[in-house]
Length: 145
Length: 145
DNA sequence: CTCTGTGCAAAGGATTTGCACTACG
DNA sequence: CGTAGTGCAAATCCTTTGCACAGAG
Image 1: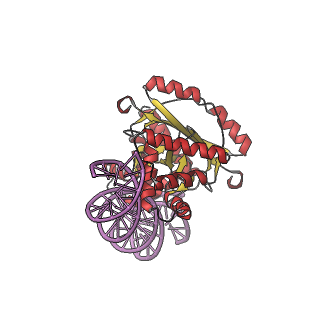
Image 2 (image 1 turned 90 degrees about the vertical axis):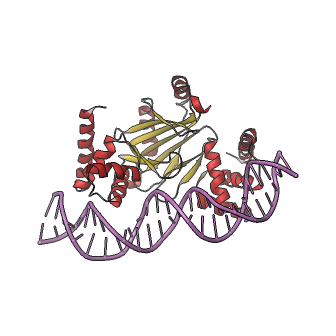
Image 3 (image 1 turned 30 degrees about the horizontal axis):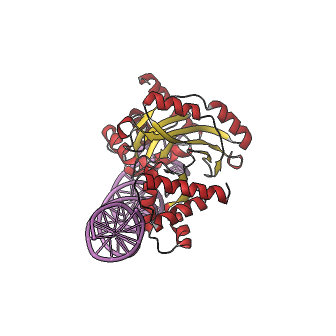
């Protein structure tokens, strides 16, 4: 996860937008950039703040709409994390993995790669065109046990 | 998933509540009963309606609070499904698996059992006490491709 | 030039507090 | 009996529309 790969991911997301016939506006670029820059764990409102640091002219609902658009394209996913507002997580690599503490809502990320077979299996069984997956483990962290 | 196992699960959830020092009130029993009865895929408001069919004296916020309590105990989990209100899913068996269409938001459930090892692995690596997990695959169903 | 996307403000829901009352243990 | 839990209503917060304008293709 260095500058280079961020740039690659940015280009990739923009390519998906273009391919599906959506316009590459300044606001969308800034929003995606901010989302990638903050690691992809953020609420809509939080993302708005980050975007404003880059470009204050982007409005709140453009952020909401862009997030919705990216969700439909399977690039991000809204999840509940703790209480309150929805958190969005990046799914552009095809998958994402969380370890969440049910006591303090801390989130740890990890890599794993045991689900590619499962993905194929499900694609066949349900005749689905699988875009990605999200895995979340719940438990109590050392401090909360 | 027959009557017997529903009863078992009900008892299990009540046992968890008791063990953690929470009271087994009439409202909570009715709410858990309704949640199990409807299969465990429902919004807070939807659940309220089901509960009211059993016992109209249960209030809306008791449902909200009970759902929050069950979430903290790791027995259920709120997820986004389509847009709008949060959906709660049962996690009392320790795990839950979804296949979601990003086009029409249809949800398919499936069983799998390849993550028990992963669970142990993570427990050791992060020193976590793992309670359960949720797996969601995203893609497009046959109708939406 | 045309049509998609944007931004503002105001509406629309969902979820959460404050407080007196009920009932579990 | 004491305290956790409940219920109502009002408040709060997140998110979504309606509509005129601006910018991408």
